Length: 176
Ligand SMILES: [Zn+2]
Image 1 (cartoon, rainbow, N blue to C red):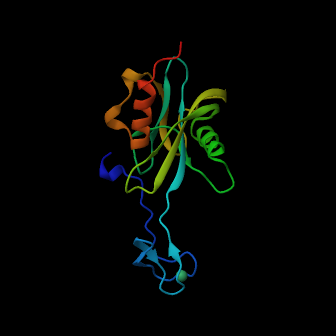
Image 2: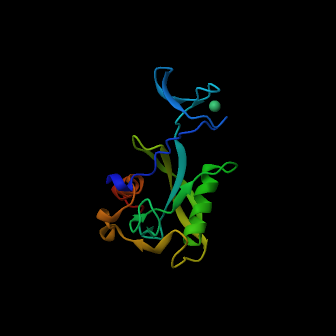
Image 3: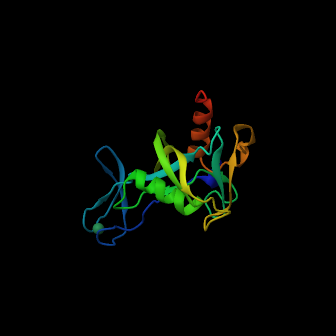
């Protein structure tokens, strides 16, 4: 993953409890963001993302070409952040529907991907289409298309999680 395509690190400058300016201080064995005004410790925990590897049949997988940063003009699995009040699986289905127009039936988790120092962990689901109609594009992408393994644009993949999920998927034996 090239540096400019790394997801944002979300390093906060102000306390989310009182608005005071945060400082770096040692807390519980490592340097953390601490508010000198109210004592709040702002832990830099990982955010959860959900992505979906949709098999359109015969190991043809769906990728979208991003029209926004990070990852502008690069290909990625449909997905996004899990919002408060929804499950990770809900987020996976919602993001896929918003970005591709497809309803999907999730078939389990392929793997969970996280890379230091990024503050994101991505749960990648395997899925099959279960309704809807494939869009030509969406708010976040120029185009959406299925790829067979030999067509995957490996030098134009936006994120490590998409690259590693595709590698893991195609390394599996094909279903009979
Ligand atoms: Zn504070």
